[in-house]
Image (cartoon, rainbow, N blue to C red; front, side):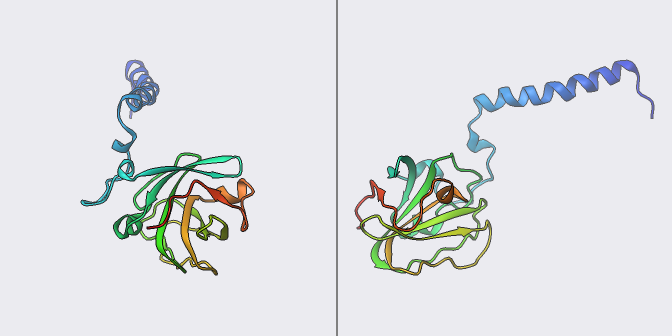
Length: 168
């Protein structure tokens, strides 16, 4: 196939102009427009209540899932989390609460906590799996963060998480 110099220059300009154009578009189009479509009835991330938690010197921006429907959806369908963003699951009873990663597109770490905010167990979870992740201890909270977040911050069992809302 033969190309003229003019068509070659046009292709070269397009190759460099398209990424620049996409960067400009990304500044004006909400990030949610580029995310995987959520199924009908799913709650968008911005609709969850939020709370600021502390883990040592770290501040966590956590969406709160405190009812059955919100806990069932959790972080499903999300394609990314901000660096210190997560989801706090609040349960009304002190028990072993197990989690799985069905329809969860990003790998996560989970910390299970007692009512006083003490981390009892931490587990690493792979995206889109149905393996059960259960703590060895009873608790009323679970906090999901990007995979490796807890270990990268030196957070381990025995650490206290502050700012937790009261279980209902």
